[in-house]
Length: 202
Image 1 (cartoon, rainbow, N blue to C red):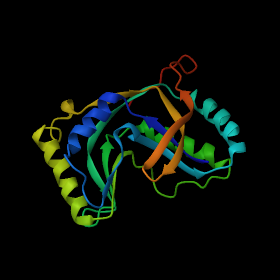
Image 2 (image 1 turned 120 degrees about the vertical axis):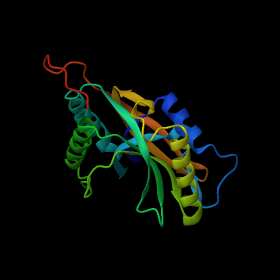
Image 3 (image 1 turned 30 degrees about the vertical axis):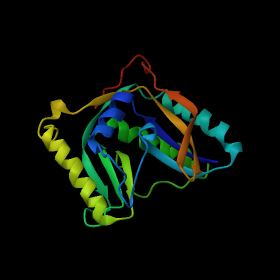
Image 4 (image 1 turned 60 degrees about the horizontal axis):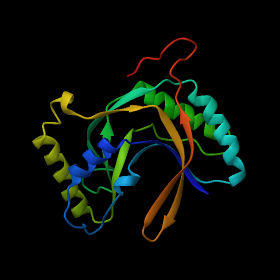
C-alpha cells in the first residue's frame, strides 16, 4: 500500500490556488495536481505493509495529542530544484515553528517502523505541478508570480489567505493512468488543550 501523511486543505484555499493557475487548456509537459488532491505533505511513506498500518495509526494518534490546532498562511510561489530547470511548481507557506515541529515528530515516529528518515530539512509547500517541459514550467511559474503581484499578495501579508489546522491524516495513494486517487485511511485530531496549557500558534 502506498501512503503518505498530510494536512488537508480547506475548499477556500483550494479555490484560491485554482484561480492562481487559471488555465483554459492543458500545458504540454506540465502535469497539474487536481484541485481535489491539493494538500500539504508532512511525510511521504511510500509502499508499506498493510500489517503496519494499525501500529502507525496508534503511534500517530498519541503524537497528535501533543499538538494543539494552529494557523498556516500562504506565502509565495516556488520551484524545485531551480528556476532554470523547474521540475516541481509549488506554493509555499509562511514559517511556522509548530508545523516544523509536527513534521519532525511525525518523521521520528514513522522511523520506528523502518521508514527511512528525511535527509533534507522540512520545506513546507503545496505541490501544484510536476514539470517535464522546462520552458512551459517557467512560463507557468512566471504566470503565477504575475497573479500574486497583480493581487498585491507579495508586499501585503494581510491579503494572503490563511487556514486553521485541526488535524492531519494518513492518506492512501493509488496510481492510475488518469492520475493519483487519494483516500483518507485515518484522521488524527489535534488536542485543544495539552495538560491545561494551550500551545502558541506561530
